[in-house]
Image 1 (cartoon, one colour):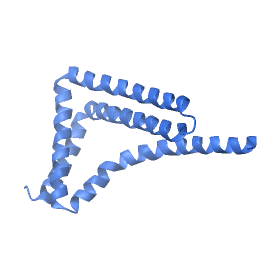
Image 2 (cartoon, helix red, strand yellow; image 1 turned 120 degrees about the vertical axis):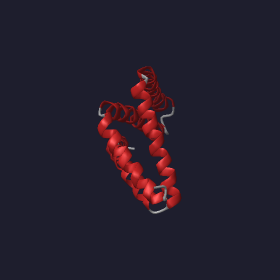
Image 3 (tube, helix red, strand yellow; image 1 turned 90 degrees about the horizontal axis):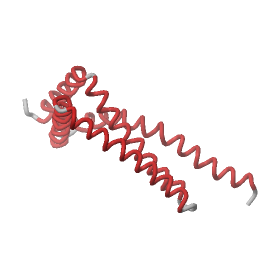
Image 4 (tube, helix red, strand yellow; image 1 turned 90 degrees about the vertical axis):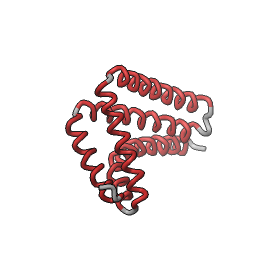
Length: 148
């Protein structure tokens, strides 16, 4: 193979990884809207979504009341991000043939976990706004599930 073909293969993986990161972030940002839309289509799904929203609110309230639990959640999040980055790097160096896809998956999981932690910090730092949004969504789901 020529140097150009090798460079092209390496560039394709780099471009794929660069494209995957913003797409994953966009997907996470749209997840709540899509899940609520799907829940509106079925009472069973609305009840399930209602439970998820109530659990999310309880978790945030727990972290507001007990900062030690919040710090433990964030520490676990940081360590899991570091572990997934290390696993991605290890896979990239150990398995040259499969390094691109497997390493990219570990990096993507690390990014998603970091996003979860940052989202929780954002929700807690703006708790009144977050609580209002969640309660509004809960009321919508209760109406759809017939639990007025």
